[in-house]
Amino acid sequence: MPELSPSERAPRSRTTCTWQLEYGGTKRAFTLFDTPMAHRACEAVLSGKCYPPLPISGQIRTIVDIGANVGAATIYFAMQFPGARVLAFEPAPDSFALLSANTSDLHQIRCFNVGLFDRDQETDLYQGRDDAVEDSIGRSREQSNRAVQVQLRAAREAIQEAGVEGIDLLKMDTEGCEVPILNSLVPVLSNVGVIYIEFHSERDRVEIDRLLMPTHALFCGQIAKPYRGELCYVARQCLPKSIEKEAGISI
Image (cartoon, rainbow, N blue to C red):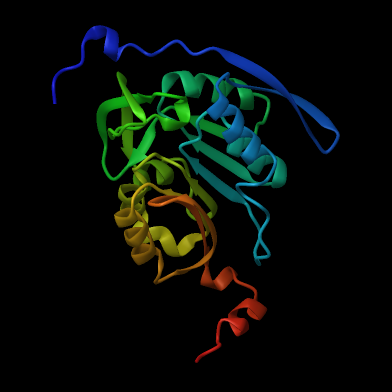
């Protein structure tokens, strides 16, 4: 692949806008990139369409948001589970700046300006053509030639260094890095209660299912178009017994 020019390596300037959110009678400002894609994505998350409450057993105490972008899901989970601590990982400098600002008053949230992967490395993060939600270390028609260098950490080690032993809720939206991250977390997947995860190819969807099948059940999902969608897996021990009984039907 040809080397990027200095101008292509520079972060693209992105205009922002600020929404007023209200949770439980409390209002707060939320700043996002002013693009149609960002508006749709953040509205879907903050309204609960992406991550609706699940009828599962167990308490949500630790939440890890990998690919936090500007913090829509981070804030949504913090509001839904005010007693939980939330760890948010985001490598893109401009997205991380908004993530930090949007969550600065929420003391249960810790933000990390790194991406997670299956190993430590520095790499180019290519900017999305339409919005930062498309930023990726991979290349497709959704990414531009503009890139910024970011730091990636091996997922298991980075999370352990943050003092996390078990994860009650894990959200992963990393534009194609989901499988390497899961591979890094395989030794501790049995300690993860709920996993919200995107897939960006049929190969990734099948591999995600293979990695999670020993410990988790596919609970629900949304497939917007072929080869791309959002899935939710729940650890089998967290499923209500009524659901387990219904699953026992055989033909």
